[in-house]
Image (cartoon, rainbow, N blue to C red; front, side, top):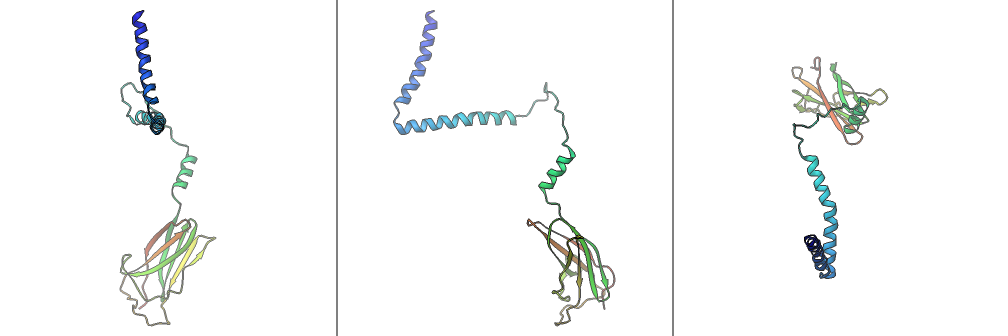
Length: 193
C-alpha cells in the first residue's frame, strides 16, 4: 500500500516539475513553448502516418491486394484532361506543274498552320523560291488545310528549283492553349525544270 502511494506521488511530482518549469518562464518563452507544442501536436501524427504509409508491406502474412481496373470511361476522360488531343497530318505533298501543293488535316482547337518548302530532305535548307505571301488555306469546319508553293514572280529569286533535287514540305500547327505540333512529307513527283 505504501509503495503504491509513493509511485503516485512520484508521478505527480514529475508533472509538478513540468508545471513549475513552465510557470518560471517569462512571457516570450511561454509563447515559444506553446507554439512548439502546437506544431508538434500536428507534425508528429503527420510524420507517423507518412512512415506507416510509405513502409513496404512484407510478403509474409500480408493478404494479396486485388488490382481493380478503372472503368474505361474514367480512364478515357482522365487522359483527355492530362494531355490535349492534337494532331497534324500531311496527307499529300506533290508537284503539280510549276507549283508544289500540300494538303493535310488536323485534330484539336487549331489557331494557325504554316508550311515551308525545304530542299534536300526534311532537315534541309529553306529555299527562297516561293511566294511567302501565299498563306496556307484552312477549312475549320472540315479540319483540313492546303498550301501552294508558287514561284515568286515579283522579285528576283535567288534559289531556283533543281529538278534533280529532293524537296520536303514541313508544316507546323499552333493550337489554343499554347500546344504545337508538326509533320513533314516528301514532295512527290517531278519538280519544274
